[in-house]
Amino acid sequence: MKSDIQSWIRVARRIGKHILNQSDMDSTVKVWRKTYKSSEKVMKDLNDPHFFAQKAVLREEISKRYTWEDFIVWRQQRNRNRRLQLLRYAAVVLIIMASIPVIWFLVDKPVGFPVVVQSGMEAGGKKAFLTLDNGNEIFLDKQLLLKEEDGTVIRNTQIGEVSYQDEGGIPLDSVTRYNTLFIPRGGEYQITLADGTKVWMNSDSKLIFPVRFPGNKREVILEGEAYFEVAHDTTRPFCVKACGIDIRATGTAFNVMAYSDEPECKVTLVEGGVNIEKNEFLISQLTPRMQFCIDLKTQEYKTTEVDLRVSTAWKDGIFFFEQESFRSIIAKLSRWYDITIVCNTPDLYDYRFSGEIRKYENALKVLDMLKLTNEITYSLQADHSIIVFKIND
Image (tube, rainbow, N blue to C red):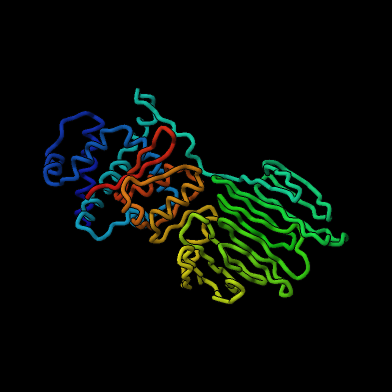
């Protein structure tokens, strides 16, 4: 194993010398090119400045965030015969990049190659619209202090948080006043309700909630995705209505994914306990690390134990995929980056990937990480839509 690695290092160094000095190819490199089919692709890539410009972004990300083991996970080989060949190809490229950093220096210089700056691919950020009971809509882009007629104080900060504080002293009206928080595509936001419950809202989501919770009932309506940390109150259960079910808790943490364009609605419990009801009948009771999943078409449901990171990492700024279908990944990327992604072949939607990357990276960085699997590639269109292609065997 050691001698094998050393031989690859020798090859990498001599290829680097050949490229940088424009010298004749020595016998070691010639033998390598005749022996390995992948050599032609390696040489083509290494002589293409655009290849290095693209990989420079990935190199920075990998060095900051990933070990070699993480890199292998991202490659997602499926036990095919080509696995060793692809790993050797990756090893050669990475070794060359590490051995001759002057290449990176040269790529950064204006040597006459066209530079394409991709705009419109930036990550989402803190953006939300608050609709008051009287119909007034407020774009939450600055500090804000409002006082409702019932005495509730609404505060918005510049760090993406809006809070409701019941200052008391004013009796509840006979009519409950509702506000709506809408998070557009490419947005996220956090809200603290009047009872102290904290809610993290994901992109393309809407929460309808009372300004003050009346009587012994705490009830909100969700469309989209949100993570709840419910303020403990055994006398007033907290209920989230979403996709035809009621999720009831007294003090707990859970995630609800209830997009109307998704095939399933999912409730994932982090701590505490929740009851799932449908048409006022109890259909499931969750304990921590359990997930309730209901098919929105057939209404069939199941409960399974899951890795919590898959459902909750988004609120901590991470995309975490665990054998996730490409269809699901595309949906998440499309909402967060507010872009359109399509596949040129239907079966590609069913490909599955595992991995982790910060969601505040540029969209193309995320797609480039997926490209490391050697399963897909993509093309950026003039309208900023993205077409994903399957790499043929």
